[in-house]
Length: 460
Image (cartoon, rainbow, N blue to C red):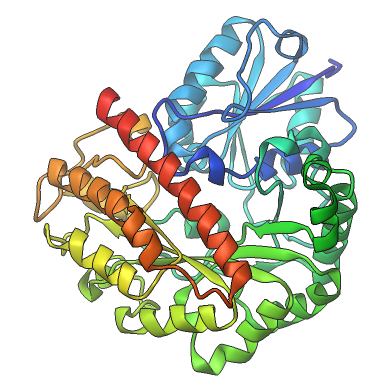
């Protein structure tokens, strides 16, 4: 049998600037969990958005296995690295959402691919390698049970390089199955829930780690006076199962943490106000909400039936009532969108006083119904995956040119994050915690997004 001396796990960068700036990046939790699934081995994790990949480094030279997690925009860089590693005689494993969607493409650049979630597969793959019986494809026939998951090995991450190093998942899956989204295919169309007790235990261990963290030392007495840690739930919808969410939020209250998460806009309704109040009491300070479009026809096109534009203003108002900041995400480029969509959307986002807004170009990811539709219609004009960065049109729009779409998205970003817009949307002084978060995040988003846009102007 072959002995595995070292495994290097890598999250590659993209070859082009992505939609999310360095300021808002999260550590690769999936790789930390992967290392925890078979903890008896020696691992090194490299996030290429933070660290460079040095082919001459001791870690790479000593590695027997190298694993790469791949989102679509990362694919060209991942394949480039994989090809270099194989030339060095390394065994390369690839996984992630892009690889799971088109494993036949990825396998040309590696020795084995993991299709879908790695739970149950990773230990088997490592044993097969040791026996000299590595298979080309490893695929779970069923979605993983989330109970009993090991705690991710966060000690392998360079936590001090992330503004929010404490990330975790309480659930997976999404029933909405939007045409442009790959989540339902990868994680399933039903919510799968971790036992609340296991989530709380994981958070407690992170709180203990935080007491000696880099940022605590920097912030000193002020941070200790706050007596809290900041967390981001990476769930597709933390409020998805109301009964579970209530149980989770009640259990979070004694921990005195701050947290943010992704949710759907329909949670912010009067009939759910008790749940929002409970979330706020448990430390919820921030939510990412996929508003997608102010055009109902575009939402119908995306089959996002849960969203109704006429409810957006009241929803944001209700979140704000409980001191919860809202990042609303919009997508431009639906067949119903003409050139008026940019100004109408920005005016709307300003009017309802969104704390932050994310403006993206509709992007047909592999494995989505949107990709199938546009391919069938012969409208895909770009096959370079590095262009699939949610800011570059890769298909022919219906009611405008690709250039109009890209320029419109850029205008929307610059207009929404203009100084006048930032000042106009200021939260009230009485809501001081939201005001501080608002100022820091808006300035950071302005700086990073403008730099990204300037870079693209030069390099596109």
